[in-house]
Structures are given as structure tokens and as C-alpha cells.
Image 1 (tube, one colour):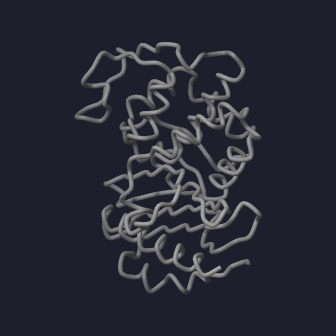
Image 2: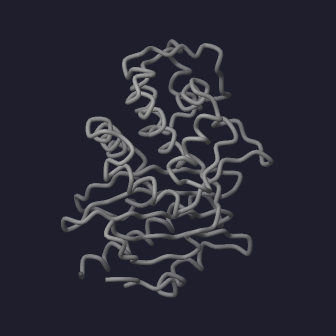
Amino acid sequence: MENIIKFEDLEEIIDKYKTEKSKISIYVRDMNKNIIVYYNSNIKVNSASCIKVGIMVAVLKKVQLNEVKLEDIINFENLNLDGDDGIYNEIEKKATVLELLTFMIINSDNLATNALIELFGFQYYNNFFKEIGLLNTELNRFMGIYNLEKENYTNNEDMYNLYKQLFQEKLLNKELSGIAKNILYKQRAKNASQRYIYEDIKVYHKTGGLGYLNLKNDCGCFEMKGKLYYFGFFMEQMTSKKDASILIGKLFKFIYMKLLQY
């Protein structure tokens, strides 16, 4: 089963939501290397919050090396973000490493993310990404502090590589891999890939969005009929950020229904 869906099959859905400036990358495949559909899977894209999965794995690697413990308390009183961008704006600014990891993923908490970035520094994360083969993934700025000249990047092939190594327990031991997968499963943002899915399927993923770029991303893994699939949708400069979420939902539903037939 390879390329059972052609990009042309999706174009009618996509056309309603794209602009002349749209940047679109789609990649769906199973972990046995069978490609379901792909389009621009190797182009570098703005990662938005999807890069937080790489940050989580990099922190858990430090835990595995006994350089930090999940129960260690991190104080980040020196970090601030405007508005409500971070649940820790409302409580004392200290938390365990595990709490920071969890809220970084399930709530996409930017303040929690920045505390973890500061903990080990940009160079550590970027070196880690390169070491595990994520050659197009770059962490260049803190979250919630926007600078068009300094963005964070990745691509679909890097994210597939990351999730594959995570689920095959090549990056972390069994216990820490299980913690990472459990956190991804608890992801609270269901308004993109799962927008039109009402069946009970297991999805381990991370979303991302940037209003000023009309951008929405969603990538991760889902289980179906005993198989594990990777999916990645990166949508930038669409008609709106909300429309990009709707589009991802429609594309995921279309692909999901096709896979049910096999």
C-alpha cells in the first residue's frame, strides 16, 4: 500500500482555503515505510509549537543521562510573557520538570517552554536535533516573543523521523518513551486533525499556530487497525488561521476514511 492517495485528490479541498502566498506541506505514512500521501514533505516550514515535541525529547534525554530529574523544581521568576500566554502567569513561577513538560505539550504553554529552553540553552537543543538526524529543525527564538527575522523551523520529514525514533524507543528508554507518548496523547487541542473525527482513535500529536502568519500545524501519530501512522500538516499563509484548522480537519477526515477501506 503506497501512495494510495494522490495530492490531486486533496486539491479540491485545499483550494478553498489557500492564497497565492500559501505554503503547504503534507505527509502521511505508516511506520513500515508505506507512504499514503505526500506533498512538499521536505520543504522547511515554520514549526510554530510543533518544535516543542523535540524540546520534550531533548529534556527527557537529559533525564535519562541523570543530568536532571523529573521531580526537580525549576524556578523561572525572571521569565515573563505579555497577556495570558502561559498558565504560570497566574501562580508561583516554579514547577517540576515533569510539570513543565506536560503543560508545554498539552496546553502548548509558552512560559513553560521558555523555562525549559533557558534551562539548557538554545545550543543544546539545536545540537541534539542535529545529532538525532533532524537536519532542518532549528530553535532560534523563545516562544511567544515574535520576530519575523528569527523563527523556529522544521519540516515534515524531520518530524516523521522524530516520532519514528520516539515510538521505536531509539531515543529514550522504555519508561521515558512511555512518559513522552502519554503526554502527547493528553494533547488538549483537538480543533485541527481531530475536528471531524468522532470515532475513538488514539492520536499522539502536537499542534501549532501563528495568527500573524495565518498558520496552523498539526503533526504526530495515530493508531488504526493495529498500525501506527505518522501524519503532518503544515499550513502557512492560508485564508486565516481558523480556516487552516478547518482544512487540516477536512484533510485528516478524508485520509482517515480512505484508510478505513484498507
